[in-house]
Length: 474
Picture 1: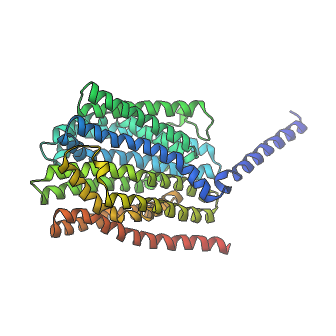
Picture 2: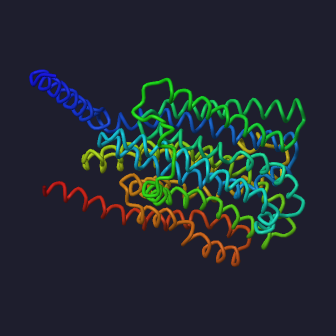
Picture 3: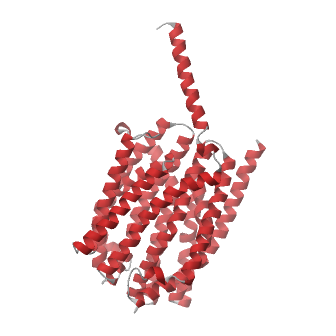
C-alpha cells in the first residue's frame, strides 16, 4: 500500500470516528426536552409492566375463583420466596443495566458487549444454583415463613415448577434490562407483553379448561416466560442494536460482575424488602390474630396483587428515569440529570395521589373481582383504606435511591433502598402490632412511608445541590 493510500485510509477512519462521535453527541437522550422524552421513554415501559402486572392480577383472580380462598392464601404465603428469586434476578440485571447505560452513553460499545454477554452467563449459572437450593430446602423455608399447614400444599404446588426454571427467568431479566439500558423501551415492553398475555391465556386454559389447579398457574408462568426469552433472543440477533451477545465473551468477568452486583444491591434490597415485608406481615398476623389468620393472609394477598398493579407505572417511571439519568451522567450532562429527577418525582407523585383517593374511599370495586366472599373483600378493603394513606410519597421513595444506582453510587443507593424496610419496617411493625393488634399492622405502612420519604428526600436534595454547584463552578 502506498503512503497516499495509507493516508486516505487513515482519513476515512478518522472521518468515520468523527461521524460516530457526532452521532453519539446528538443522541436524543442528550438533547431532547426532558419532560417529553421522559414520558416517551416511560410510556412503553409502563405499558409493558402493566401488561405483565395484569398477569399477576388476573392470576390471583383465577386462582381464587377456580381453586378457592386457601389456594390464594398458599400462593400469597409462598410469594416472599418467589420475590427473593425475583430480587436476585433484578440485582444481576439492574446492576448490569446501570453499567451498560453509562458505557453506551460514553460510546464504548465493545465493553458493552462484554458486560452483556458475561451477565447472561452469570445469570444462567446463578439461576441453576438457586433452583437446586429451593427444591432441596423448600419445606424448611415454609416453616421459616410461619406458613399455616393448611396453606403449605398449595404453596408447594406453586413454587416447584417456578423454581425448576429459575435460570430461564434470570436470563430473561438480563435480556429485558439490556433493551432498557440501550433505550429500546419498546422491545422491553414487547417481551413483557408476550409473557403476560400468554400467561393470562394459559392460566385460563390450565385452570378452567384442564382443571389443573394451582400447578396449572405455575406452569403457565414458566411456559410464557420461556417464550418471552426466545422472542427477546431472536430480536437481539436479527435487529440493529448497540449491544450484541457474543459467545466468546460468555464467561466469568470477576471485576465486571462485582461492580454489577454491587450496583444491583439496591434492586435486591428493594425487591427482597417486599419479601421481608410480606413475611413479617404474615408472621404478625399469625401472632396477633390466630383465629382469623388464614382469611387475613388471603385478604392481604389480594390487596398486594392489586397494589402491585397500581405500583407498576411508578416502577416504569423509575426505569425510564434510571436510563435517562445514567446515559446523561455518562455524557457529563449533569443539569439534565437533576431536571429529570424533578420531573420523575412530580409525575409519579401526581399519579400516586389520584390512586390513593380511590383506594382509600372505594377499594371494594377491585377486590370484588377476586371473590364473592364478603369476609375476604372486607379484609382487603380495610387494609387498602389505611395502607394507601402514605402512597403519595412513593415518588421520593423510588426515584431518589434509583438516582444513586443510575450514577454508579452503590453504597448510598443500597442504604437508601434498605432504609424503609430494614431500618423502619420491622421495629415499627412490632411496636404498632403489639400495641394495636391487627390495625397496628396496617398503620405501619403510612407511618414508615412518611418517615422514609422525608429522610431520603433531604439526603438526595443536598447531593443534587452539590453536584449541580460543582458543574456551575467549572
